[in-house]
Amino acid sequence: MAHGRHDPLQLYSAVFDSQETKSRFAVPINRGISGYVATSGKIMNIKDVYDDPRFNNAIDIKTGYRTKSMLCVPICGPENQKVIGVTTLINKLEMPYFTVEDEEVFMAFSVFCGLAIHKSLLMSSLKNHRNMLSVTMELMSYHVTSKPEEVHAFQASMERQGVQMQFDDLASPLFDAHDYHLNDALVYIMLQMFKDLGYPQKYEISDQKLLTYALTIRRNYRDNAYHNFTHAVAVSHAIYYLAKTGISRKYLEEIEEFSMLLAAFNHDIDHRGTNNAFQKSAHTALADFYSTSTMERHHFNHAMTILNTPHHNIFERLSPNEYQRCLKTFEHGILATDLALYFKNRKPTEALEGCYNKADSQHRELLRGLIMTCSDLSSMTKRWEGSQHTADQVYSEFFEQGDKERALGLPFSSPLMDRSNTSKIPKMQFEFYGAIVAPAFALLAKLVPEVQPLYDSVLANQSRWKVLMDSNVPYEIHQPSH
Image 1 (cartoon, rainbow, N blue to C red):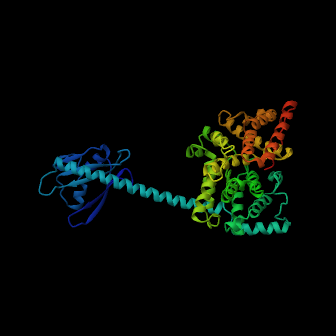
Image 2 (tube, rainbow, N blue to C red; image 1 turned 30 degrees about the vertical axis):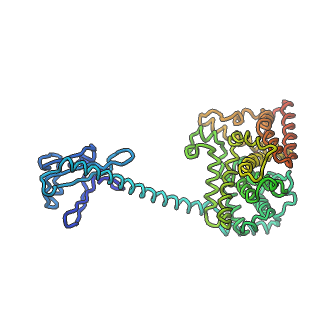
Image 3 (cartoon, helix red, strand yellow; image 1 turned 180 degrees about the horizontal axis):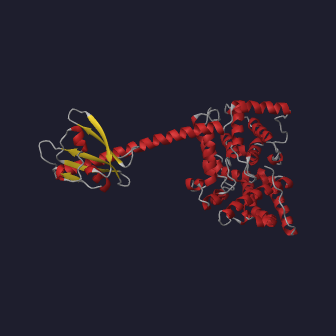
């Protein structure tokens, strides 16, 4: 029988006699009657094997057994009918040879053999994949998660520097995480947001676990010009602001706020500095694995991998019902940052104006999606200088993607990626505000009137881009420091 981890050019034969003893032999697959059946896929029913020149009598010589008649049937896999083995009967009792009826019965038996072997191979493959996954998870747990000594070192370093985990203006809508260039400060901003909202007490998250989790998330953001850890904290702050001021509680439930803050923190984790269009046109492994919302699905799955590593599951003290709701909202929040989903859900979200019902889970889901979109764009609501600087970071990353597209011989996924359009940034920004940013915040302000000041800030920044656009002064970006 040729299958499994054996040499595919050999047939391995297990011979049983009437006393239930057995012997094993290996012969080349191109020799003997069994070899012929294995290579041709044809049934062989031979009345006297010594009359057939293909018969290999080596086993008879070794065992002293005298083979007479033989019925040899191929075993085929259930998927592609490829021969994966051979079953053989020899020397039918009380008759000189095998009949046609024997062929039919034995063929049916070979089908069951094929299914059994196929299942055995699948189980073996599954076991191998599980072992590989286990090794991968072990490697990931060691290399990309924070360890206790790192957590202690972080705490000691902050104490030596005299850095206080306190940001008095954190609840202001103008607070901008991009103003803080030290990643340690960004971690403390994130910790303060969690603690200000009472989540560690509410959901029984220890300080040690929360810090370990935050440091691990930081480690898993790449050093991109824009889609980096700073952006994660900035988007998280937009969710924090709505929760801290009590705005979102009027429209959403507390556990949804908690899940959305976590979703914002993770929403671009392990971002590659390239968008979904690039993934598809470059036929990357991610695009092959995730056919829609490619990067967003990767972010969610990567975030879940971290949650499932030891000492990182900050959901573990939730009740089963809370856990299920958290995960659902967490996934929805990350996927909602795909602008393609924003456009898809825009009309049903617009239909909520004047009839929003907090008790309706579908209404809350649509609103959560819009809030995540606006939070992802929240840099457009900050002071002009900060908003402009963030735009410089965005275009620096876009141009790096465009350079990759050019090097790969791919068309630009958007004019925004073409470095030669640097002087057109004010125009491109003004149009981006008009097509996406302003309409999104206008819709949010209709559903949540308390955010009108954010929409006003968007319009003010859009007008500044228009001034630059109309000035015809060549625009230059300041390269961000990584």
